[in-house]
Every structure is written in C-alpha cells, then in structure tokens.
Amino acid sequence: MAAPHFSSNRNSERTVPYQIESVDRACRIIRVLQAADKLPLFELAELAGLSRSTAFRLLATLQTNGLVLRDSNRRYQLSQSFGSNRRYRIGYLAETGVTSFYNALAQGLIKSAEQAGIDLIVMDNDSQHCPEVALTNAKRLIAEDIELAIMCQSYTQAATAISTHANRRKIPIIAIEIPHPNAIYFGVNNCLAGLTAGRHLARWAQQRWKGEVDEILLIGSSRNRSLSEARLTGSLLGINEVLPNSSHTKTTMIDGDWQLEASREAVKRHLDKSKASRILVSAIFDPSALGALQAFKDMERLHNCAIVGQNGSSEALLQMRKPNSRLIGTVAYFPERFGEELIPLAMDVLTRRASVPNAVFIKHQLLTPANLKQH
Image 1: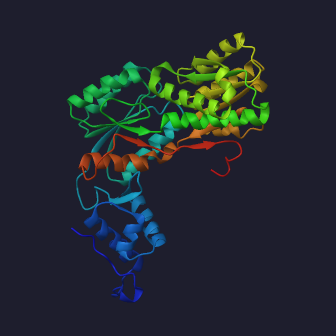
Image 2: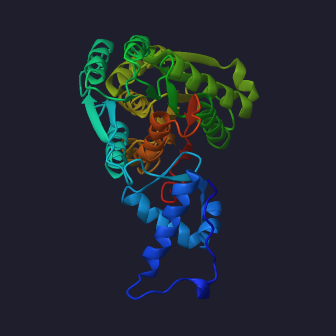
C-alpha cells in the first residue's frame, strides 16, 4: 500500500471549525506511518507535506507519548500499542548494583518500555555477582511467560547456558555487551572502543612525556574474556599506532574482575614489583580504571600514570573534573539512551516487520577533562 502524500501548500490545508493545526499535522504523520511502516525523517516529512523541523518536533512529541518509535537507523514507526490492545511481555535481566552505568541503562529501558506500551518484567542480579546467580535469575525470568529476553549480565561462562535455556523455550534474546550464542548483540564495537582509548593515551604521552613510555598496563577481567580481549587488543593497537616504538615496551595484563576494589588490590601488587616511572593504563571498565587510580595514589605514584576507562560512568566523570586528574579519559556509551534503540529493536524481532541484524553497534565518544562541558 502506497504511503499517502499531503500537499505542503498551506492554502490547500483543510480548515474546519475548532481544528487545531498541530494536531492535524500529527495526524498526517500517523496516517503516513500507518501506510508505510518505517520511514526516515526526510521522507516522512515530504510525504506529510511538512518541513523537516516541524516533522521532527511532532515526532519527538509522539515518541515521548509512546505512539511512535525510532530505531537505531533513525527510522520512525508506529508503536505496536497504537490502535491495538496487544501488549508484549519482555524480560530484562539487570545488574543495577554494579555502577551508575547499569542504573542509567535500566532507568532508560524501563521508561522506553512504558512509552511503547510494553510490559517489562525486570529481574535484578543486584549485588549477588556470580555466574550461578545470573543463570538462576535468567531461568526465573524466562519462566515468566515472556516473549523476548534482554540479557544484561557480565559472565561469559553463563551466556551459553542462558541461550540454551531460552532456545528450548523459543524465546529470542538481545544480549547487551556480552555476546550470547544465537542472540542479537547490542553494544559497543569493543575493538574500536579500545582503539579510541589507546590512541588517546598515546597522544597524552606524546604531549606530557615526549612519547617515552616505560610500561603499558592493561586491566581486563576473566569473567568476560571476549570483551576484555577485544577492548585491550584495540587499546594496544591504538598505542602502537601513535607511538610505534611502544611495540617494544613492556606490556602487563592484570585481572581486575570488573570491580574497583579487586582492580585496586591487583594494581597495588603489581606496583610493588614495577619500578616504571611512565605507565599507560587502559581498563575495560570505569570501576577498574578508578581502582587503578586509587592504587597509584595509595602507593604515592600518581605522577607515574595516565589512565583511560570505558563506559563513561558518572563516577569517572566526577573524577575527571578534579584538577590534574590522572584519569585522562573514558570512552562513553551513554546508557541512558539504550532504551530508545532496544525497544524498537525488540519490536522488530517480535513483529517481524523488518529484517533484524545479528549485531547492533552503538555509538561511542571519548570524554576527557577538556570536553566534559561540551558533552
């Protein structure tokens, strides 16, 4: 069915008693989407006979009120709840007790689900962090008669078992950050995010240490090896790209177990042995970066390091606001916006109205003390 086209000539617009022009324009957008399913802004505006700025403002209002969804390619579609009593049940396995990053993710996802008229069933691992708890909670969530599961748990060793259980129940999975077999991956391109961190560390070393580096310290985690290896390999490539001589520099990898205190203690043990005076530190997660920073402080060696984290957590941003902080950057993913992409993606899977990719990579942005105000 062809999408309707409305004239952009203001004189041709129908005028009837009590008509509200803005509502009439919003109705045009809805009628276009009813016929055309998904459209980008420029095409939708043209078919509705509206300027792009007007169409954008109306779409933003419709989106806020749960009538319209926007997917990761910035195409708009009607919410499944519009004109229908059908309410989907989506399960969400969360880890809100870890950092502000996961709290922001959960809040944004819950808000987007409410706006789209979706029943979101939340199971929170809270402070009980181990693969057994993640698997148990995932099974409990799948038993809640859900139609799709969004998994946000950080244990690679639990991922296969979770996917096997969901596949038996024929429940599709969207996996955030940690790949799960047969699931749609949603998250950052880890190698590119690591590359961004490594390049920034190397450029800082060029400016402050004239490119002289004694050691490269990489803080990963055994609980999610694929993510850890991708981010840290990217970091090393970024450093070597900017500082070719660093390929001969001593490189040490430490297991920070994804946590601040574990990273702090691991880095302190390392510093007891290392006498390096110029150390570049790349961590896969902001808590590990903050733990490393505290370790250097504990050992009275802050002047020996430059550290970059990942995730753009509020804790990292607060630290970078301090004068002369040695946390010189974090690669931010803006988790508060995840829900705006996850819910349309979930609807595509459930309604099969559009082809769904195997992976959806979110945008990332390097935040530094120099550009914090800007972002």
